[in-house]
Amino acid sequence: MKEELNEKLFCDFPDLFRERYGNVAKDPLTYWGIQCGDGWYALVASVAELLTRHNPNIKAEQVKEKFGGLRFYHTYNDDYTHGVVEMAGHISFQICEVCGVPGIKRDSGGYIATLCEKHKGRKPKTIGEDWAATTTPIDGVGTGWLRLIAGLKDCIEWDVEKNGMPPVTDLIIKKDNGQLHVEFSGGDEQTRCMADLIEHYAKKIDEDAGYVLDLPCQLAL
Image 1: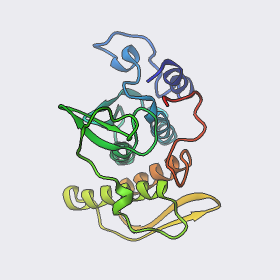
Image 2: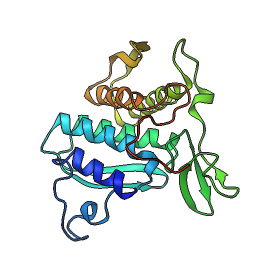
Image 3: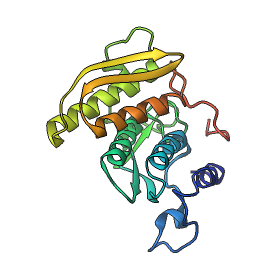
Image 4: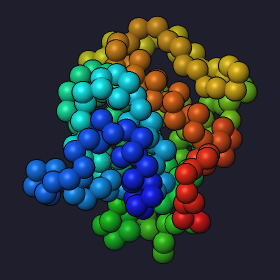
């Protein structure tokens, strides 16, 4: 991540990123900085705000890209933080790491990254899918937000089947005063924080096109 964005995250969330100096063995985050592309800046910022709001004692230990997805390692793990980080990692597979527009996971000769058509390079193998193309349209909800909803449903289904999350019923998606809102019955604390991440990140992107709004500095074009 470029220095300006990296520094803004560190300054906006000084408690979360509070150990600014150290060596790579003890603190890889502050030694290397945030190790992902500029396109995930807004997503990292959403995670940082929700974690800080939940528990001001949390400390980020490492933030990076791995196998095409966002990884956010931190202290004071609980159901809420696990859900936020899991959801962010899941939807990062639909966000171009370079510029923040909708992207797809691709394999370029063994190097896996989530990239848009413009930044995909030369003939990579597509190994992901466009969630919006497989999601039932929701009246009044734009395609950019539909990708988030598809990711939420997919993540909930996985956790219910594989991790014992209580089933979620009556999942209601709506737009209220220009913002995305998620309501549901069932689930648990982890389900709620997954929805919190979706709602929070939706405020940062264009509802229809899915690109990131109001960045502090220009992303790669």
